Image (spheres, rainbow, N blue to C red):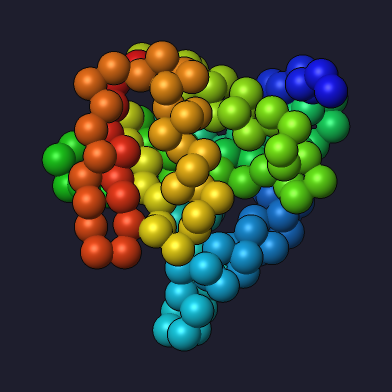
Length: 160
C-alpha cells in the first residue's frame, strides 16, 4: 500500500460551514473519549469564528490525493502556560483515511509549516492520539521534545 500524496490547504471563509460540519463529528467523537460523563457540550467551541479573523489562527484542510481527508487547526495558544509560538489545537483525519499514513504526513506538513516552539496536548483517554503524536513529532524532526504530564492529558512541547 502506498501512502497518498498529502497536502494542507487553507480553509477559505466560503468553506467555513463545511469545516464546522466535519468538526462537529470530530468534537463529538473526541468528547466520547475525553468527557464520557458528558460534563461539557462538545459543540461549544467559542474560538471557531476567530480562525477567519485572527492572523495567528490557521484552519487547514488535510487533502490526500486531492480529496478532503480531514483538518488541522493551528494557533499560538500554549496548553502548558509556558508560552509557545505555534500550537495544534485540533487535528482530525477522517476514519476512512486512518492507518494509511495520511495522519503522519499531515502532522509533518503542519509542524514543518512554521519553525519555532510548538505545543500540542493529547488527552490520555485518546489512546490512538497517545500512540500517534510521539511518532508524528519525531517524524517531523522535532528537537528538545519534552512531555509535560497533567492528570488527564500530556502536553508535548518541542522545537521544529
